Image (cartoon, rainbow, N blue to C red; front, side, top):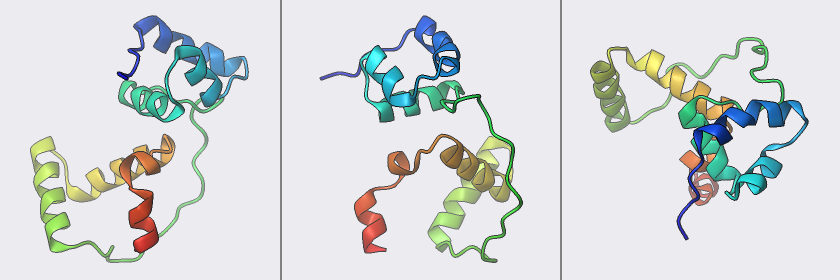
Length: 117
């Protein structure tokens, strides 16, 4: 079954639906799509599904330094960042911010891989 296409009017109505107290699953049901599909589609449009929009940032968190990434991953990250006119640290940070902000962990990672890791 093909995913239902969301119209511009549907996207425009999402902030009001959130303000009414509707949750992601309710909105997805209303539009006839899965909650994960709605999440990804909204992320691509820059629409937050959080009630009230963006939240205030938490305190800074430090990660292991250096971050353990394979040479292949680092080369791909550098090449992509260069093509996008940025550096690999900024690109990696932006990717992590988007994944966390829009709760895209399951869309990006296979849960089976996490169990094996």
